Length: 146
Image (tube, rainbow, N blue to C red; front, top):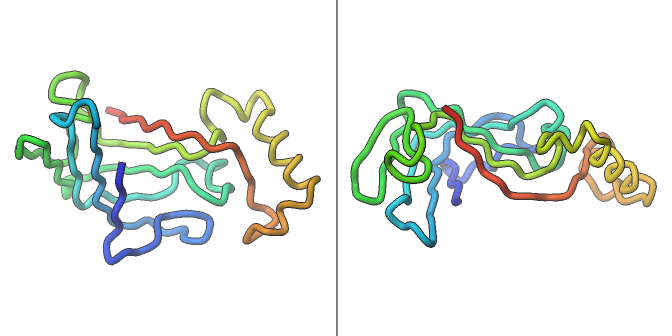
């Protein structure tokens, strides 16, 4: 997945809180026929808890101006196929999860809070932009929603 912001504007994060227009390109190594690009894709942060972390989970809520272009040159607006034509329903929301704040209910089991508290106890939060910034272990799943 490659995210390009308009005019190289920073990707939304705790330091850049406004949404930004992006071009999103997804490339599949084993299925290049599934590759696609979405132009005019508004990107912002996902999740209330997730926005307390230094790096945000990214979310695209695609509107009519969003243009999907597929590997075969065909196009569609607003919604499109995330992993090949007809494999699943079209999606118009995409979330790229960067942290465990809301994945697999990890925060409800206390694992995320524990990691954040250990980080603070070790005095490592002094290197962050704000002491209210939370930290978590990274993961990189991407999901599409209808």
